[in-house]
Length: 114
Image (cartoon, rainbow, N blue to C red; front, side, top):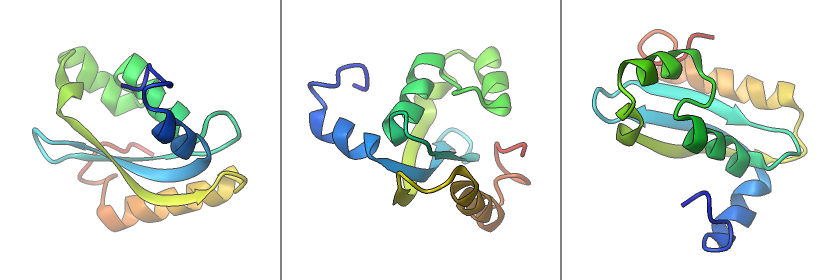
């Protein structure tokens, strides 16, 4: 569990030390959301922790899904698409994120609005 950093010490250190482009797949319908984690405040661990606590991570379409069904997040699978250095600028990370959105069609067929 994300909440217990001691029990997941290896994952906590590994995911806290990277920036990344990630995929959330809704296994109930195959729709995908592509996001990124960057900056110096906890890396990918912090970003994914946001999803654990909010069930939507602040994403517009995931919020709508959550409002319609508070348990829909139980169908989500999280995957890392690309590991990047933690010191990489947010602009560079977002360029990679946008590349994956284009390649996988997550704006047209998925859960990305931007």
